[in-house]
Amino acid sequence: MEINEKAYGLGSKRSIIREIFEYGKKRSAEIGAENVYDFSLGNPSVEPPRIVVNTVKKLLKTENSILLHGYTSAQGDQGTRKAVADSIKGRFGVDITPDHIYMTCGAAASLTISLKAVLNPDEECIVFAPFFTEYRVFIENAGGKVVVSEPKQSDLQIDFKDFKGRINAKTRAVIVNSPNNPSGVVYSLKTIEKLCEILKEKEREYGKTIYLISDEPYRELVYNGVKVPYVMNYYDDAIVCYSFSKALSLPGERIGYIAVNPAMKGCGNVYLAVCGAGRMLGYVCAPSLFQQVIKH
Image (cartoon, rainbow, N blue to C red; front, side, top):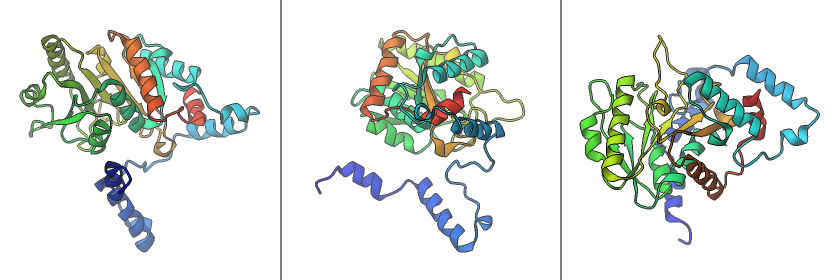
């Protein structure tokens, strides 16, 4: 066939998550949505906070509707990026600026852009099982190779012996997802500190940067006083990929961001690579309306 075989393969067979989602929609039409419990996609079961709805209504009534629905800067509206940077600084104590923030179409775009920005052909990216199945697609699309580290069976925290054995001279990135999809496990402070300690050791050993990419769409979904460590406070070469989809019940609006650690050596160049990767992948800018919602 005169088409891209890999793209055909992905398009002709959905992920198992999407297969279950489509089956759920079919059964809902047959027997009623109230009789179907869909555990596939992370669609919300609660409405967005009232402040989000009211802000959207207020913005839609603005006289400057052309600006509201127009393009922003490719990396995102300056005011929105400042609001995100100020939030990170206030919540986690990281001295970050708008020039370290890149607004995206949700966490999937954050991950694909970040991986494209840091991975060179045949370099490896380590993921911790169990992991979101699309990581494999994102990494391979960036030209990288997926390496899976198996967790401790007792609590699904990182098995550091297994992890250290997976790192080699080709390792360029590690993805950490906490709270984890699909297990729900939150990596403890002890786990994050040990992970970062090993990565620093391996950076020195191989004389190269190993990026820690933190996928954080579920950061706010923790209970009973559980804390989610912020990786930038423990590792300089960290990139945070965030989405407002889960915290604000807005998965269909596709709004998130990439944050590059200002403590990273060469952070300015990494940020420019993020901007370039977004351009290569065709992400002109994140949805303008919801950039304004986040800013407000």
